[in-house]
Length: 324
Ligand code: NAP
Image 1 (cartoon, helix red, strand yellow):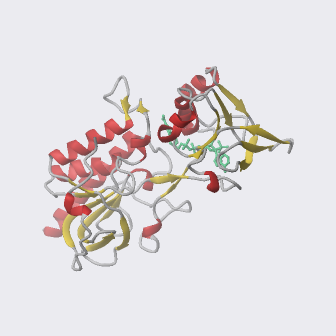
Image 2 (tube, protein in one colour):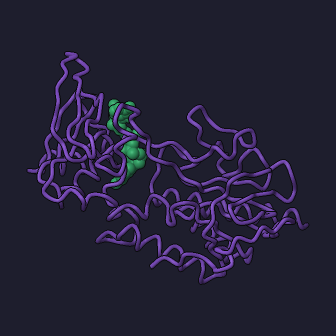
Image 3 (cartoon, protein in one colour):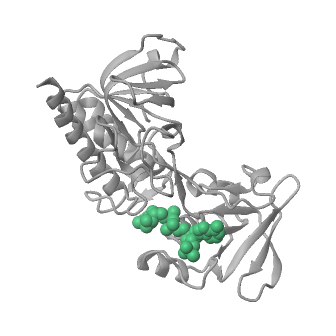
């Protein structure tokens, strides 16, 4: 099991002056714990704020088959736990807490959480990204009642049921393949007639007997009273509309980075991702970013972990230069 942080973090102490730390890591996914591991080994006694999801998105992935060192694959939660343990073995601390605002115009840098204020000499942001919604009628209303963004979390509820998966990327296909463990029939609905996903996943999905595809089609509505009953579809080439019965709708159409609390503080690109240079530095000295919050392109566990370790190495150099 994951360690859910120190008891201290769970008591609502409002420390007005703030707790001083050398390095604060925001986020507990692969980037966060890789940063914490390197920072702990540099004796910076890093404090990791878990955010809402301990272990990040990787912890919601059933099996990770492309993280080096695990030839048979490794469970997402298991890998997250190993990351946490390794960082903590060298002196990192985990706080089950969420940053709610920051003030990077001050030195030390200020980070306010649900429980207290931190005064940090440096900060590494690894707050990741959240799944995008389709923003169609019925979607929001039926979340948790058939609409889901996480097959690992909710797939089990669809034993012997009919499920629709939206998207044509790696996530959609990987999650659809996962749902084949439970559902009797999976229909992947993609807005084009060509998949974005990599070849291995494409072949597995295209060959799977439980999976079929509807191409050039978008969902226009999720229909249901108490729970999902059907989806309305529109073919984007012919404009033909149709209805498909379904018990579940899984949506995997990309992500939005968790950067809202850095509004007006850090530079972002047009999609909201934090802009960093090759040393993981943001535009504010002492503030670094790593993982999916700063990477709209690769978004892999291994690349996020690599970015996290690079950010920690650079943060260590930054702090050494401050002391010199
Ligand atoms: P993605 O690659 O951005 O794919 C999103 C998919 O959703 C695309 O097929 C896109 O269609 C579709 N889409 C986007 N907006 C839509 C909308 N409004 N309505 C209908 N469809 C929409 O996202 P992802 O699959 O989450 O993957 C993100 C990154 O993580 C990628 O770099 C991927 O390689 C990586 N990843 C890797 C693995 C793995 O290696 N095992 C697993 C998961 C994710 P279009 O194709 O038409 O744009």
